[in-house]
Image 1 (cartoon, rainbow, N blue to C red):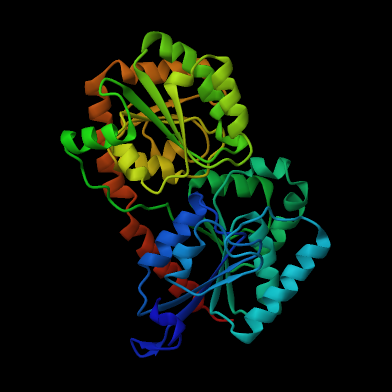
Image 2 (image 1 turned 120 degrees about the horizontal axis):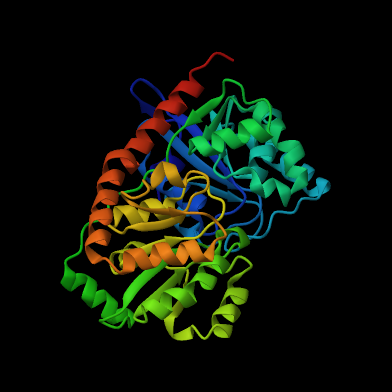
Length: 397
């Protein structure tokens, strides 16, 4: 358990620590939640005191979060639930958060994900929180599914002191679809820790433990099964890939978020069961990446993908859709290949291109490893975030 619980106002460099409160809907395992977890583990605790609030339950990462910072869960700690959009529930959540902030106000509330980006700033202002940061990490496509958010998200921007984006693509989408953002943007790319290299023997031992045949070529996808993640495009591309490369094995990593069973059924219909494995949530994703030959990311909307960065850090070439922030991470023809979204034929051609050329895969994988080490490190992200917190906290009211 961290020392912040015992001495949240301990002195550092002659002044109290900056108190940062994070706000998430829940802490189920996803890219944003793992980003916040990595950030919380890495921030300088001599300068920052951290806490976390959730508005819609806990989730699978609750234990990991609670080991490093105080966690206040509205709902069941071990379970996350879908955020309810009813106005009455939103008002209750805002009032409850405002009361908690009033009792122990942080210096900065840092909200993540659309619902929290609205509820958090309102509760913060009612609860006497001095500064607010909202984080936008996805393209605006989700607003078509949640029209209420389309209407109210600009309110969060109005009340925020800074709008943090993780790619230029996300910034452009906010400029196109929202208001009250003028002068507030701060861009900090996602960052990840380095992934140590494996020897061929280490990779072979892991593949044997996983039951991956020695002669198989493993193409891995790491993505929870949301509709927009494009698993159906990947499955429709598989028959052509398998016909030309019968030793291919697709490893699908991620929890069911609405489309897993439909994806399983389509795999069965196409007779691809022997070429596809559904691995669910895994804590050893870096190991699975290092044991694979190719990373495939068929998502049709993406702000800036941590999964792609993890694959590049692990030395894999990437095939991804040319959407959102993907071109800011994947250099087409250098660290991987970009293809049109919702296009199984183009996806299959790109996958086969890399499966057929081991030297090309190695060259692109090494280029991706270098790119993450130079541009997308966890250390760089943490330093930029610390500078943002100091800048926002130090402003005049």
